[in-house]
Image (cartoon, rainbow, N blue to C red; front, top):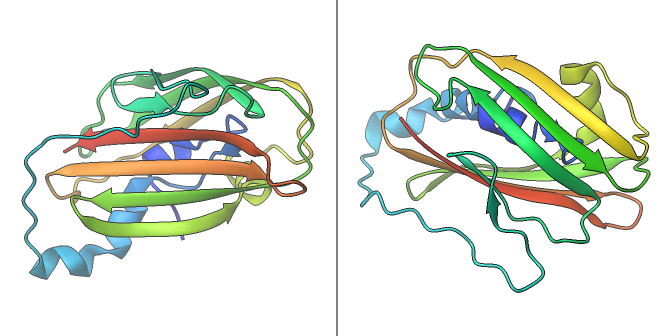
Length: 189
């Protein structure tokens, strides 16, 4: 199963969250959940809420869509995530360029991805980030300290229903469950 652009990019920062570079984005999730949209009508007030952090969290915008809500001592420090175009559109490819600093050696890692459409949870799954790295970025684990750049092109399908999509991605190192990073993304189609 594949994730969607945000998952891919958002977490496409896999090593940016070493992880967080997942397969295809939120769009594949939507495709998988297409049956829900045929019979369910969701209304949203349009108000988006972001998780508030204690004093140890970053809670900073990486762009108009993605927030880095990692802890200061997480193993990956996301420097930037650039989207071209800046706001995803149906039937329009998007290029994702991201840079992150890996602070410690990572042998293997896992990411939990949650995607919601309004109040409906479309996805809540764990992914092997090393497998995703190999499949999507042609990189392998282990990942050593230092910079890692991610460049991904994602085709956004035209069948995405209108409304807000919320993504939450958290990644951790498997050996000691030390958090790599955490991001939130909100996009409206």
